[in-house]
Length: 583
Image 1 (cartoon, helix red, strand yellow):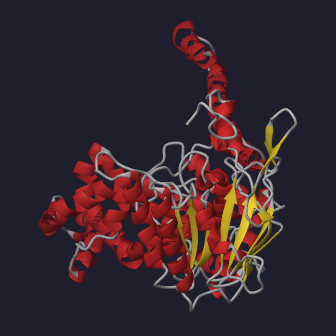
Image 2: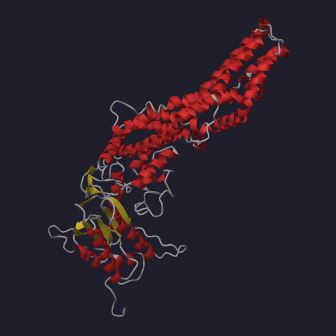
Image 3: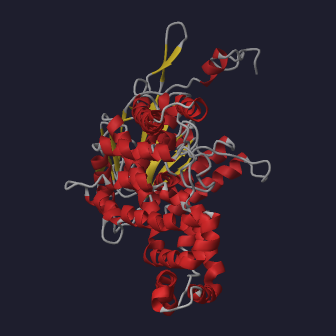
């Protein structure tokens, strides 16, 4: 306002000319303040994102992670062998706990790792997984690198640019082909126009001679002008979804150092090595597109552009860039996604230093000490020792309702998934060999598809049995097996399924309330027994109150609490069975 007042004083108040100096000073000051304000605002935004990064870590220490926005809901295919049973995705899921990615590529990579757990090849076990675990350990200690990667990704995520349209152009199979002679003419003729225009008199040429050269340019441009303009317009419009990722790539490349783990170094080399150089190539592309953007000025596009053969010259440069790097762009984003996934697992490891790094054994087995479920808060988590020493071994888990049977099975499964993606597990010690995880725990019937509860369960059991016949030994986890049918058929069917799995070298655990199924482990105390009975139990206080310690014990459970629980919620049932007038 002061500047406008100064101008008004000069124009209408006949103020001295020196006031112009004041006006100029105020104008410069305004521009400077705009720049300072922009930088201050950017610094504030960056500080907010940095704070959010550390708040995420604090939330992982307690129950706050359940409020994270990213849940991965809908990512698991309906026929996946364990995703639904182990709560890999959705609210209060493993994905929600782990995910610290900021780009869709990072989320895709982390989800793919979780879904691909247990798909072990005998030739790569355990070397590939050891490299991944080493990378997670490496990233866990790189707090500043993880922070910078998360901050740049969060700033990018404000309006979540989608690079897919740009990728479609980069990976297109219809190149813009221009003969070499035309390329040379496109570079030479604009200079010739200028030379003829400036030197026509000196050369003894008519003053309109330059028009002849322009006419030649237009004739040469005619076959290519529409295609060049379309490419220039498309790339200009879609470039934002690609170029805005440059700060994120710069943050990713900054993670390289002389002591970087082999897996992390390999990923970073794809972005900064001789075949990658992502940030340099992105900067080169941005310069080309920046020149193309000049065509958005109508005067330039209609008059100067054709004379300078602007579109043709820069679209040729654009096509050369696409020929050189177009086929690599998607791999750059996929690599960025893997780095973000490693950063998520590294952050999880850093935030939970009490978790154990799994030992990777050559032989199929599972050994755990103090094993708990990672989705249960540390203050409530109870650890148990579990051993499955090799193929053909199993646990039959019995126990009271709510005593911890299903939680134990899910802890075994979730810990196996974490171990197989290179992350630490909620245990004091954990060892795992090459196994393929398969579960039947959460059964979903369907009225729409006409699938009963029992039929849905036997389909899941069939999938587990089929998996035991191929690939590495199956680690099976079966919860309340065949509880959708009568006791006699349940016992016969359940025993047949477990015995079949054992016969094919599977190992695992099955929970049940049915003591007939528990007879599978009746010889659990005998030396060399392959099926053991273990159990949970409740404690009943003098006033009838039930409590649970969630401790795993050897042998078969000797009590049940179903009737007590029914009475506890107000259902009138006898505790000791039918009375004299209750047939």
